[in-house]
Image (cartoon, rainbow, N blue to C red; front, side, top):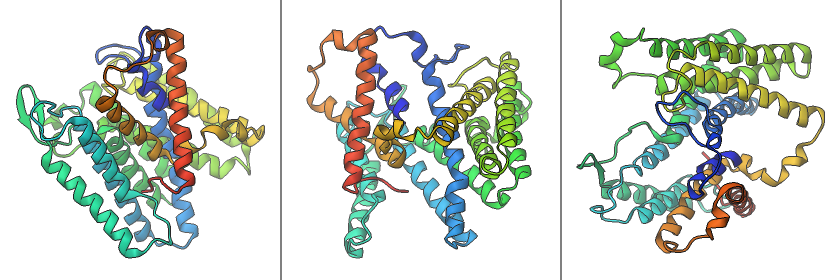
Length: 379
C-alpha cells in the first residue's frame, strides 16, 4: 500500500526514471509501477486462509462465512464501479464539479463501511449508514459521463482497481472455503486460472467471444490467478513453515522459479503487459511477489525485524482507508489548490521521487492517526 500510493502520485512530478512508471498499452515492458497492483492481489490471496480460518475458529458456519465473503466482495465492487466512472466524468455538463462528486462518494463509503464502535447506538449507526447509502444513490443519479462526444451514465467498464480486487477475492475465497485448505484443489484452481489466461492470449478461446460480454473471468483470469497464487503460498506457509520449514522453502522457491521461467518463456504470447494482462506479466509478477514474501518471512519470522515496518503499519491494518484518503486530498487540491504548487525543483527528478515517498508516508501517518480515533473502513 505504501508503494501503491507512491506510484499513484508519480503523475505529480517530472523527469523521473522511466522504469518507475507504468508501461503503455502496447509496450512489451515491465515498469516498477506495473508490479505493485499484482503484489496487492497476491497479498489479498495470502490473507484469505488466515481470515477464513479465524472465522472458522470462532465457530462461524460455512454459510455465515460465505455471506461475509459475498458482502465484502459487493462492497469492493460498488466502490470500484464508482471509481472507474471518474475516468469519464463530464466536467462541463455534469451537475456537480468532479472534485465535489469525488469527495461525496468517498464520504459515502466512510458512512456505509466505517468501523463503528460497538458502543454506538444501533439507531445512530443505521441512520449514518442509511445516510451514506442515500448519498451514494444520489451521486449515481446525478452522474453524467462523456465518451467519444456522447453522454453516458455509470457503467462497470473494467471495474476499477477495487472492483478487480473484489472479483478476485470473491472467486478465490469461495474456492478456498470449499477446499477446506487442501492443496490439490488450490493448485488445481491456480492452474485453471493460469491456463485460462494463456488460452485467451493464444486465441484458443476465440469461439467464446459472443458470450464474453456476459460471462467471463475478470481480467481474462489474470486477477484471480495472482490472488490464487497468494492463497497457495499461504496454505503452504500455514502447513509447513513451523512443522517442516524445509518443505515450505523448497516448495516456495520452486513456485517462484517456475513462474519466472515460464513467464519469460511465454513472452511471445503478447509480451509483458499489465494493461493487457498477459501471461508473462501474471507469472513474472507472481514470481516477484513470491520472492518478496520469502524475504519478509526471513526478516520477520527469522530475524524478528517487524519493528522496521512499525511506521507504516497502518497501511496494513487500515488498508482501504489509506487507499481512499488520496482521493479526498486530490479532490480538495483541485478545488482550492489550482495555481498553487510546490516549486518545480521539488517536483523534478530524484527530489520529486523523495516528495512522492514522503507523500505516501504522510497519507499512512494520517491513516494511523484516524485509526487511533476509530475512523477507518472495515468491510
